[in-house]
Length: 278
Ligand SMILES: NC(=O)c1ccc[n+]([C@@H]2O[C@H](COP(=O)([O-])OP(=O)(O)OC[C@H]3O[C@@H](n4cnc5c(N)ncnc54)[C@H](OP(=O)(O)O)[C@@H]3O)[C@@H](O)[C@H]2O)c1
Image (cartoon, rainbow, N blue to C red; front, top):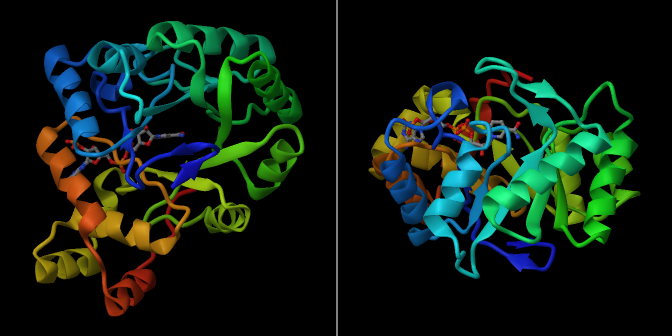
């Protein structure tokens, strides 16, 4: 599928879980984290999602250490707009001056002159949304961003942003149990832009339902493969970015791209929607 002029496989990789516990600090085993990143690319995940706030800075640094100089097929999508005063806090800061500094930091850590996909991590209620997006548009004009993406936005905010700068992707929470952002997914489909569901496994929660487990057992697949195959079947614009710190889970998840669910299985999974969360 495409992100602007870039082509990527439909199953990406979420690089948030390569950091230490609570997405804070270094992982216990940096060498293992780097091996995981290399393996993710080898398995065909050529869209890596990260952010300056993961660690903070740790995920971006590990990606560069593991994979720079980058293979030409690898697309790195990072984000700015959140800060981490401590391990339990994720605070919004989408002031233009902060986004400019954040982008420069990401360029340096990722050892890039231009970020392929730079996503606004979340709108900041203290800053007019158009100002945050306008800052990304300026940095795109300056050649530091190839394509702009959004995260944690409403369909109205997507419309507003598109009047300022072309948008290639939206990243919102979405999985079998939580389909709150169905309207944003619909908008992405109409526009032909990628929808990156974060928490595609509901951080493990979407794997617990009876329907998922029953279908997985029948197909000799795993619950995570069923949850990811359901997402892939749900929309041609869906680009899941499952995250893991485990090579075994990574290998299991990547095999989901080859799993086809029948019409009956899809109908059954559609019925078990929980619509929990926000
Ligand atoms: N834009 C945003 O605001 C936002 C917010 C959150 C996340 N994200 C992005 O979305 C990506 C995915 O989100 P996520 O990592 O939080 O959630 P997720 O992919 O739904 O779930 C990851 C969790 O599920 C476990 N898991 C992974 N594969 C599994 C498998 N095959 N079987 C059983 N358990 C499995 C992982 O544990 P193990 O490590 O043990 O495998 C981890 O605890 C992140 O990496 C990040 O890039 C974006």
